[in-house]
Length: 127
Image 1: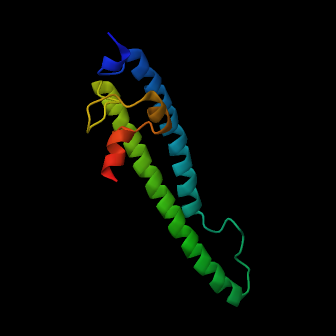
Image 2: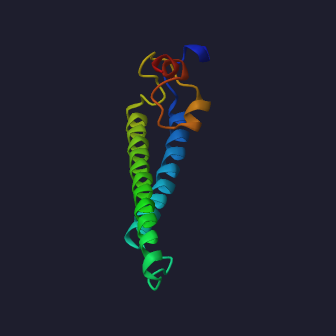
Image 3: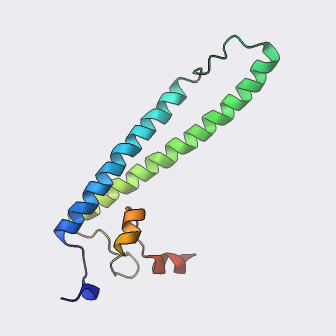
């Protein structure tokens, strides 16, 4: 069978992607834990004894920082969900198949964006 006619990735190829994704999930969970840790421990800078006027500025920037950490954590959770969904597709042997065109998504794209469900061709049509 010609490589261009391939309709799905082989089990060994799927295993390679599974290892890649599992590693990404592990490191993403560590990052999420670090973000959660910094949210639950806001006074790591030791600014408790700062003067009143400066303290108000600190509180404002701490609030902004907390919001951006919350956004990062939310993005990280979504990324982990997407990676876990990709693992389900690997189990179903539907991983790497574009949901628009039904063609295989090139390995290079999947290595860069392992949770991709669209080929670049389909993604460009969307935008």
